[in-house]
Image (cartoon, rainbow, N blue to C red; front, side, top):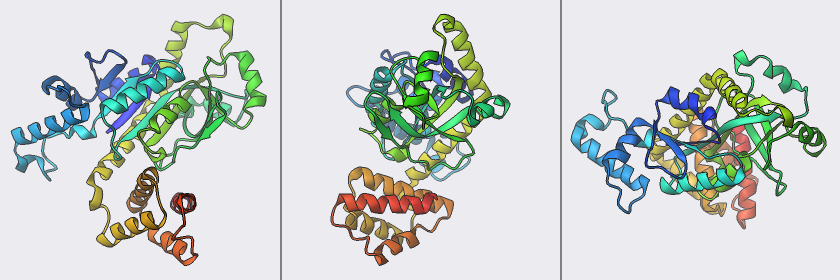
Length: 351
């Protein structure tokens, strides 16, 4: 399953249309749009005290039974749709507090699993005036105003976060500063000094990351931003014009965004298959590294994700692990040493 979070409806509208998402009318705290199979589950399953994930499981079993096990298991031609492969899009509202609340509510309701993926998608302002990105921005027909975020700075607490970049795509990368106020032209000038090493400014990315981190690892998080402006003049701000601009920019990039979401869905499906990806000897090696590296739960999930990515990409991750044993980096004495081992494995796979 893929969870998508956007701040505004104009940002979400092109994706809602492309994926045919349906609005959950019973969701009153935040606007939420879900895949058709998930909508059927919400309509047909009496939830009672169970979570949406439990209700989803009940619906899944019911559908399999009604269509017959022979038609739903291992049959590529079956019309059965697994609700676990669906999309949940939540509109959070603007700002870090709204974003954190919406992420926490959605991930709690659906009881996010290690195989699920999270996408924070929205718009951002371009920092520092004319840059290389500014040149790219002019050619919006090629989707050049869309960026994959590799580094996030929370301006309020001066902390930096790094999503894992495991999805292979051609979207250019950028760093973002998250603040609590709309970026004015005056504030943008201040950012030239205060955030000289960052490319974009938004109001939700850092909050989404920190809230999601209570439920998932950085390998389950992705951040896409579409550039709409380079700071707004206080006297010229018009809500209608800004909404129209957001829709236009997102629509220009919608194909690249849809492609990225489909890749996230594919990763989630592969993860659901679990042990089918690895040989028994590789499963044993994974467990040995986890034990010898004193990995925490989050580190374990990250390591398994790296291994699956390597297997799907044809990368020999085993040789990297064997090298760590030869160099006496493994076994480690504590989690701190395990973190270094995990970073080394990640670098060998993603470089």
